[in-house]
Structures are given as C-alpha cells and as structure tokens.
Image (cartoon, rainbow, N blue to C red; front, top):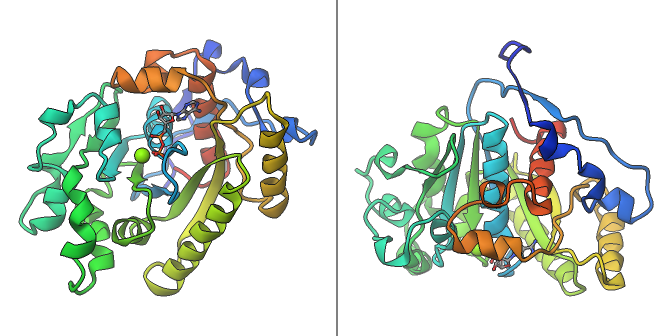
Length: 305
Ligand code: ADP
Ligand code: MG
C-alpha cells in the first residue's frame, strides 16, 4: 500500500540543478534527452527490493556503485542495507572499517556459517543516516569449497535476509568479481541486477557472460530475476572509444542501459580512502550528482522502491 503522497522526498536544488552537465547516454549519442523527475514519492510499504551489483570483471565500479547508489537512495528517504559479498571486503573498508578491525565474527561470512547467528546483531550503521551495512570478510573466498556439497546452497543468502526484509526499502549486494557460488547466492536472493561496466571493447564480451548467468539463475533458482540496468562507469568523455562502445551497448540493449552515466573522476578514490561515500565527501561534485540521478532514474523506472 502506498503511503500518502504528501510524504515526498526532495533533494535540495543545489544538488540536482546541474543535471545538464552530467554524462547521459541520450545526450552523448545525440538522442532526445530523458528528463527524470527531481521529486520522488515515499517508498511503498512491504519487503525491500533486493538488488545485486554484478560483473565478473574487477575494477569496474561495483563497490563504488553499491556505496554511492545506496547513499543516494538513503538521501531520498529509503531505508537502505548494503551487504559486502566480496572477499576483498572493499565495501566494508570504503565505509570506514579499518582492515585490522574487520574480524570474522559479525561478518556476512560468519552469518553464512552459523545457523544460530542473529543477522540483526551483524548490522552496522554507516555515516549516512538511513544506510546500514553488513561487513564482508576475506574468508568469503572459501565459500566455493565450503558449500560444495550442501543442499540448497544457492539459497543461503536469501534465507539469511528473510527476517529483515521488511525492515528495509532497498538491499544492495556488492558482489565479488566472479560468477561462482557467492554471486549465484546473491542472484538467487535478488529481484534485479545492476551491471556496472567500463566502456571499453572487451567489456561487451563480459556482458554476455553476465547475461548468460542471469538466464541460468532464472531457469533454476529465481525465475523472477530481472536486469534492472547496465551502468556505464569510469566513462571518459574525452575518448571517442568510450562513446563508440556506449553506442554499441545502447544499440544492443536499448531498454537496459541507464541514461545516467558515471564519468571518470579521481574523487571516487579519494572518498573511498576517507571511508565515506562521495555524496558526503564531495556532496556537490559531479560524481555525487550522478549517483543521485541514478537513484532517481532507478525509482522512476519502477525498479526500486
Ligand atoms: P569493483 O568493485 O568492480 O572492483 P571499484 O568500485 O572498487 O570496482 O572501483 C575500482 C577502482 O576504480 C577504485 O579505486 C575506485 O575508486 C575507482 N573508481 C570507481 N568508479 C570510478 C569513476 N567513475 N571514476 C574514477 N575512478 C573510479
Ligand atoms: Mg568491489
């Protein structure tokens, strides 16, 4: 049931009035621009929308997208939970936990292995109001071997999240750069997938692999799984190559490519090293504005609450 329309979230004008400066698929490809409303309704009640951020290639912006899209959704009044599902635990570090503090107890790995564990005790608050997270851990790397003979091993994360699914509007899962057991678990637990990709030629092949995996998941463990969108990240406006690859992808997957593009900027590395999202570290930077626009686009498309 929808909450009253009076409960709307509005970004302050300074944060969105530079939309025209942001990289957008339509504008870059000379197509009619899409305008995304600045005002979004309050989320409907009911269980969280669960979204996996997936690409088997490393360094394409999965973790950056999880943290910053999460922060932007929280600014829009969504109750957000982030799950670090990568043994590199870069999301955990990017939210300010120092590596030596990141013990196994209370991490998602610990929850996966202890059926008695209470997920609520593992939930931490980030520096962004409304955005919580569950830590990753390097021992996640052992998942493949550990769960190999378990029955229903693909459903472990889905079952783990079930008790808290009504406590959040959106749950974002930061996946590891592989399409193995962990990612299969994430996809089985999700309503939809966001695929960040760099606009370089070989990325197109990787995209087909991700799409094949999604197809396998749909016919086995999660028939409702959708691709919410393909997100061009680390986009270099200066090179023709970036734009050419964008055009190839937009022609091949016209309904899936987000209009919002995340351009390349050093501000992302800087904010990660400070342990906070770019939306708080450099609130009016182009990177922050882009992830805010992505959050509104996702809601506008009807993919996220
Ligand atoms: P993944 O999770 O896919 O491995 P990350 O999100 O960790 O990728 O990003 C890899 C590196 O690229 C990080 O150092 C991050 O700060 C940087 N990065 C991510 N997005 C951008 C961007 N739009 N512009 C510049 N650097 C970026
Ligand atoms: Mg990552």
